[in-house]
Image (cartoon, rainbow, N blue to C red; front, side, top):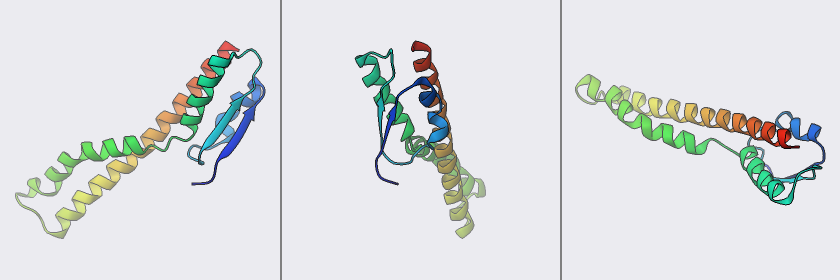
Length: 127
C-alpha cells in the first residue's frame, strides 16, 4: 500500500474522470471537492463516500466467500471420498478456499468500482 493521496477536484470534468485517474486500493485517499453548486453537507458526505470507495480492497467480500466455501470444501475434499484422502484431500480443501477468497476479493473490487461510478453519476446529476 502506498501513502496518502490528496486530491482536490474543482470541476465536474475532474470528478467524471476520477475512476480513470485512480485505480482502486492505491492507499488512503483524502478527497476534497471544490465543486461549484455543491453545498457543505453534500460536499462532506460525498468526500467521505468517494474516499471510502476509492480505498476499497474487497477483503470483506473475500472473507465472506472463504466462510461460504468452507462447507463445500469439506465435502469435496473429505466427505466425497468417504474419508480424508491424504495430501490430495488437503490440497483440494485449501485450493477451494483460496479460489473462493480470490474470487470474493475480485467481486468486492468490482462492486466498489460500480458503486464509485454510480456515486459519481449521482453527484454529477446534482451539479
